[in-house]
Each structure stands twice: as C-alpha cells, then as structure tokens.
Length: 258
Ligand code: UDP
Image 1 (cartoon, helix red, strand yellow):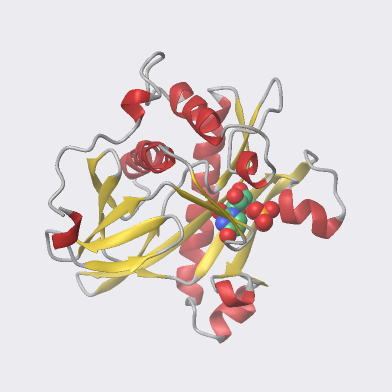
Image 2 (tube, helix red, strand yellow; image 1 turned 45 degrees about the vertical axis):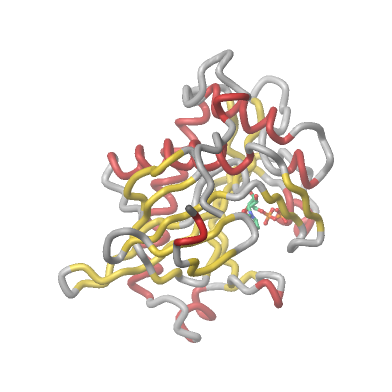
C-alpha cells in the first residue's frame, strides 16, 4: 500500500506522503526514536501509534477550542491527514519548570518552578544544532513576519494554559514542550496554524506525586521502558482503556502489496 503513495519527505520520526485531496498531506508516525540530534537512535515498537493517538487527542481538542491546527482527521492508528502548510523554520518551546537545556544553561536545579511561563525560539536547522534565536533574528532573516510572531506567541500561551490544565487533571505536570507552526493561504489571507505533533516525544511530563518521567527523557536518559511511559499518558488521557494496551495500541498489519 505504502509503495504506491508519493513520499514527500522522511524525517527522524515521521514520513510525509501526498494526501488524497488537494492541499493535504498524510503524516505517518514511525517507531524510530532519536535523541541528541540523532546521535542516539532506536526503534521502539508501538511508539508511533501512541504518539499519533495522543497527538490526535490533543489536536482535536485544540481545534474544538478554536485554536487552529493543521490536523484534519486520523486515517488509522499510525497515520493522520493534515492540511498542507509551509513549515515556519522555528521550534517554539514553552517552559513552566526548569529542566533540560534551560536548567543547564542557567545553572538551575531541574524541577525549579519558573516565576512565569517562558517562551523560547530555536531556528530549525539540524546542521547548526537548532540554535536559540530571538525575534530580531527571526524577522531580520524573514523566517516569520512580526504579525506571524504575534500570532505564534498568543497561540503558544493559550496552548500552554490549556495543556497545563489538561495534564494537571490527570496528575501530570507539564514541565515544557515544543511546537512547530505552519502557514497557508485561505481566501487570499495568510494563516498561521499549529503543525507537527504534540506528544510525549516533544513534551516533558512528570507525574505530580512521584515526579516519575513520562516522556522522551525516559529514552534520552535510559530510565526504563518508553512504551510503558507513553502508554501511561495515553491511559490517563482516556485514549486507551485499562487492559487494552499493549496489543491494541500496536499497529495491525492488514495487507501488504509489496
Ligand atoms: N524538544 C523537542 N525537540 C527538540 C528539542 C527540544 O521536542 O529538537 C522539546 C523537549 O522534549 C522538551 C522541550 O522541547 O520538552 C525543551 O527541550 P530542551 O531545550 O530542554 O532541550 P533538551 O534538553 O531536550 O535537549
């Protein structure tokens, strides 16, 4: 089946295929895990399915709230149909608690609550290791316009508020997360929408009571089973029922043409 589709792009965790309708793209979530700019790699069975289902759950809720995203619908456990957008070459990180690179850079103890949420921008460029940039760089180099940056900042704050509440309700602290945005033209107007995915691959999620990590740091820091952690997030969100996982969370091979 996959062999007949036109592949547009293959990244570290996803493959993009041409969509069945104009201006659409199929996103295929792979089981590949990478960290430290792809220096550490593994294939973790079921990860793509869990990320697709968690991201679908979150993007559907954001769409319902009137926060525009590229998400149209899921096609199967591992794939979703999204609007074709031009990706803005920025990684937008929102932080609520010091961790990871921020803790290192500023000498803060991981887990220190921040005085307020902080938004950071990184230029998406693997060769340069995604350097941190500010609005001066972004607008001077034309990666996004000042108006687009206004939209991105406002949407990022709303998304952080919504996600912090969503996770708090299931006993999880949203420490930080990364987003990507895209633009497309609608009725002669350029619109900015949330793109990519929101899943434990690009969030830091800590259990509120035990501080146990339920995100990609489990893989980055060799803290145990990544699928167990992601399944726990999916279970608490009500995406998979107790007893359903892991079998039904895994992809089922229905038919192969090649
Ligand atoms: N993040 C991501 N992709 C990246 C870099 C960071 O999804 O290429 C996420 C990461 O999972 C975390 C947040 O952004 O939730 C902040 O990451 P940080 O800057 O602390 O970098 P890290 O410690 O992951 O290198």
